[in-house]
Image (cartoon, rainbow, N blue to C red; front, top):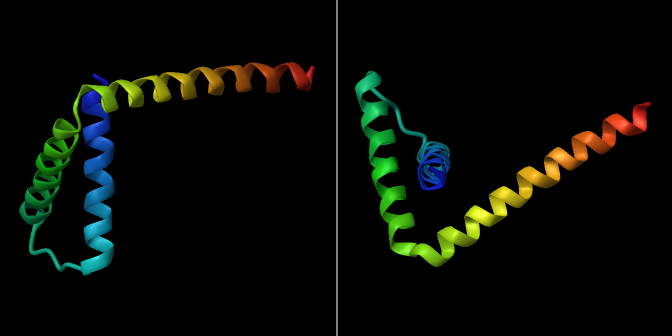
Length: 81
């Protein structure tokens, strides 16, 4: 699950970077879809080559970030009371 989310995030970042750097003109929705699919394949290959150790570390970073976010929300509600 975390792997899929990381692939989607990385693919979206790659897609926007390519669009902003190259200023590509698309002729139809199929071209955009094909490029986005290619970015998904590339990001899947990149994250697949990183190995389990790096992905395990990223998983714990994401989990820690969510926990800190929830604690921050609870603390900010207590300050308002």
